Image 1 (cartoon, rainbow, N blue to C red):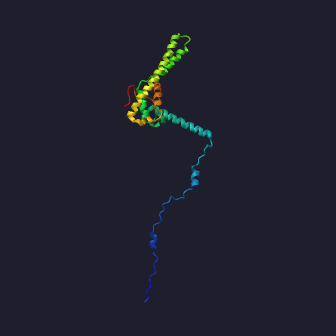
Image 2 (cartoon, rainbow, N blue to C red; image 1 turned 30 degrees about the vertical axis):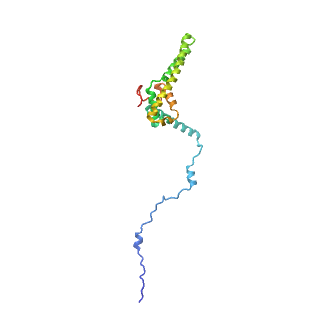
Length: 198
């Protein structure tokens, strides 16, 4: 009695039902580091310097116009960096709400200039009075700027905490704004006289 194993039969159905292998790759070889660096390289000096300088000037002009428009409308997101932030906004509003001696300084200086131009014609007493008045206004404006910063510093600490004073140049920012004519200030004043920020 011979026991023969049946020969395996070729089943064509199994090969037909086997799914095709699934490729998860990106389908292309990864670039070498040298190729990637070469693709990123840009010349340090542009080939057409004149055209590059012209494009840079145009971009700067567009940026300045955008910032100027933002300072007129009060859009803080497009203002220059020096004018951004709640602390700077508070300083501007406080200075604009206050009547500052410094904002009248330019008018008085202009009046004194007219007096000195006609010093040969005017009596010496008027010229001397104009000179004394000019020095008095300068001293009062400086004292007023000092008082302004003292008041403002207390308010800034009360509203924003001691860390608000860590920013550099806040005192100069406030005093320089106080010495500008109200209508010529940029960013434009957003509050009326007497309307102090809370």
